[in-house]
Length: 218
Image 1 (cartoon, rainbow, N blue to C red):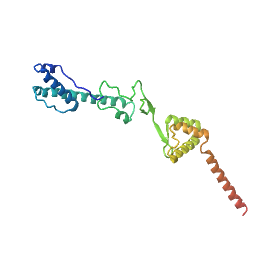
Image 2 (cartoon, rainbow, N blue to C red):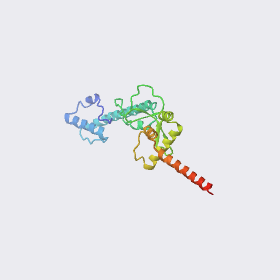
Image 3 (tube, one colour):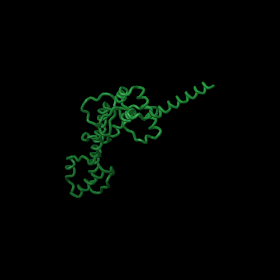
Image 4 (cartoon, rainbow, N blue to C red):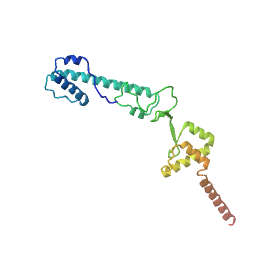
């Protein structure tokens, strides 16, 4: 979170002991403005003699805060590089992370996570997918691919992946397919592309018969 204030040390009260209320008010206002903007105030009263010491205190506090933020961000990165190599996770960690902050959209690690995966924006672990097909539209996890292979067989799985991949490429995924595992299963279940394949084979067979007939008739 952004820093919304600064540290005021008790000893400053002793430093201002001999000053009147107006001088103390101008001094405290200068402290607030300097902490917020970093600009030196224009002080003309007695408070100007005390300002350099107070300014040094504010600068020291700010430096300590920045060092703490950098250290905490580094520790968070070390923690989550054991969960995922997704650099987007680290991009979501604010530069001014403090020990009090809870980083949004990053999961709390409650157990050992095995295998490869990515962290989604909701903070859950999702298994990494791999692109299949000539154009890479069909994205399946290793587990999904193995289940499809078991259920459909290699030849039918290759056919369905090819059909879905080419269909998505030719239309720019006009159907807005997202669940590629389900789409491949629908391709198999509904026989997508089979009618065209059968028609093509029938045409080839018809051409073969025509050639044989012409050859037989001389």
